[in-house]
Image (cartoon, rainbow, N blue to C red; front, side, top):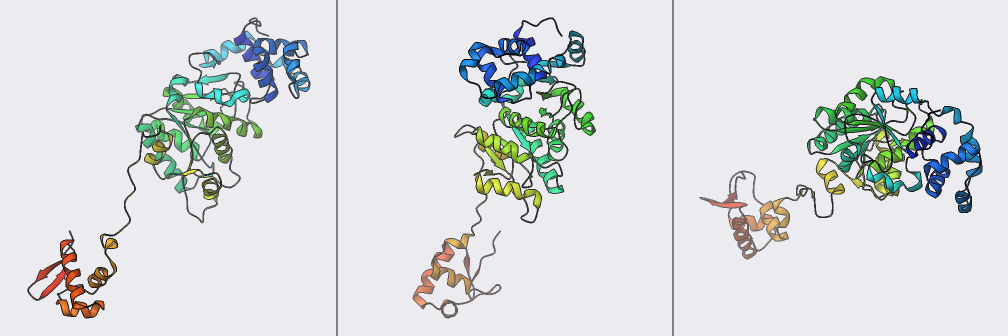
Length: 381
């Protein structure tokens, strides 16, 4: 065991080896007495008096479970080897600690293992999480790539989970656009899951960051993917789901964003695609904001009155504003050639006086013009 046993930093490192991330009993224990006293209580095998007074549910069983893992606490040499590999520890209170993680309360990480050149706090100040299906369709890959690149070009950091599919498209697009990206892994940074993305992780670390709550040599577990999703949601100003089936893990990230009261956005997809069913469901049931491009996303995550998207194109036609009689007269015009007022009145089913009035209005609006033999449609530019 390492020699710095009395320090808070070492206590946090040790706790990251003893308890699973997001363990609420540990979170309440650390909140009640601090990480140093919490670690000492685990070493002693009994809760400290201050924590016992709080009545923390499951604490006795937790301490028993954590104490059985004390042999996992790393030695000085293991910590030094990870440091030489570029893996650093960032703790609450450090200058690099992202402020947004405080919104997780007792479920906040005890620390983060970080690899990469970016200052994590700075990188996450203007960040957007973009997530989606591992088995992304061509549509999902295209949309996530275009969206991530456009956000990166505008200075936003892209946060995602480092997985195959949409996550990989997001990270690659951000790097290709010259932006920063943060990958939140469900394994330890030394393990680097998925293994097939090792080269991508190397590229991400050059200007961005890889982060994990798990010890560096920890392999991923099925629950670990869901646990890490709360960090993806908490680190950013808002979350976009590009593609998600009804049982997609991306919906776990969406749920955390909703529970944290962060803007939750979803990209609509084909109604025939199973990979878009989750997106449609959270738009319908969770009031997720429907987004179709970068302007919609920036508007949703910007302060009120800032980042407003340009209005969508008006789908109305100029003739939609005409009254019924003028519309009928305009409809009576032939595609080619001209007609006199009397013939137009008959075709439109209106009186001659009404037709004359309508012709004046239509001419003023630029729909028609006089000709040698009557009136004709004006050629529109």
